[in-house]
Length: 346
Image (cartoon, rainbow, N blue to C red; front, side):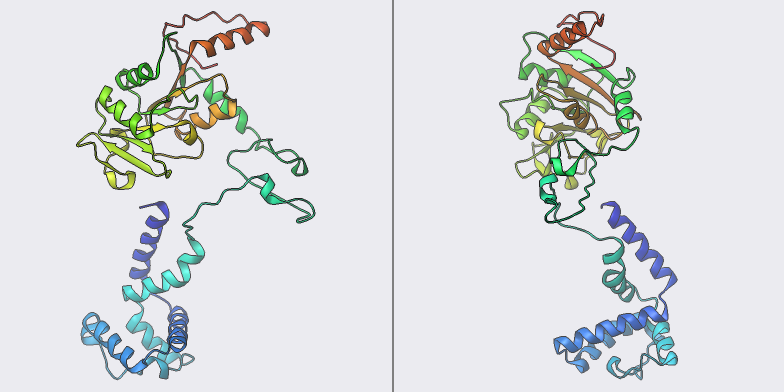
């Protein structure tokens, strides 16, 4: 269940315990009566149905002499107080009120996720003032929108986290590396990885399901399945037992017992819950930007707070890094492409 669902469940429990107020009962009854009138409901038959429903719940407190709803004077305090006594603590009544009036206002749920760009905001001809907010800000905006206003300190915090040796380590790949080598290395690594974030698009030639299957074949000891994104962007799990494929929400596999694969397309905007101390492998390529790198790294939402990252860098990328360091007057030591690296990623 998502956070919204948990909150709603807690509200329902609290409301059932505390009961409703007379004004809430009146509001609810007015709505019910209006709906029944619009639908042409047979009020006598509906009253009989209500009696059959409420009599077992009210027990000795049930009184058939209570007026039919359509004859009630909702402005009469004596009648509404009697209704509150009868209906104020009934779970079906409370749930109906919450679903109809409370939850739509306080916890709205959208079945579709909308996405847009700066162009979708239109020009000054349509709107004299245009504002946009994003969790992944960028200066790649139409000229009319001006420059992006970044939250102060955020970029520095990201840079500090992603250059901290205690958080990010570097593993150079050998000169003869291949996709098979990368998958085998990740599946058999010690300490183990909990995720592969392929920002560098090094893993090619396989479908996401195929990558998940290979990883399980090559190792991933201690993992019961691999989470991946299918062709419809759904989070699926390939289970080790029987190679069954099920939606993540139905898999019943805890975060500490599953491996996550983010293909290059899904290294931005895709969240999969990871264990608190999870270690992820992230791939580099010469065509990546820092934003690509940061977006991929922060798939690990707890990075810097227990979660760590190991950057897998091909030798050609390391050669470019060293060349740029030399041009800038740096004195970084040249790395052996076959050696193990440690320390912060460049």
